[in-house]
Image (cartoon, rainbow, N blue to C red):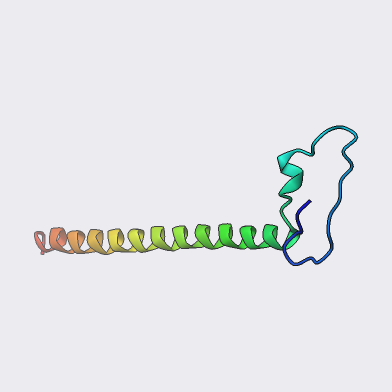
Length: 74
């Protein structure tokens, strides 16, 4: 089997049951799993930051509209 990222040892598998499945040949290393987890978390944070920015602009717009509405009664 091919080497894993960050490892120098060769990997072997018996062929008594036929060829190994493609999933076994492309095992995701723990370092890769950690990187994917951090990447997913960063994407989630970026999405949340974008939503907060949109909500802040909507609140600012509503405050301006309310101030205009309030001026009608002063």
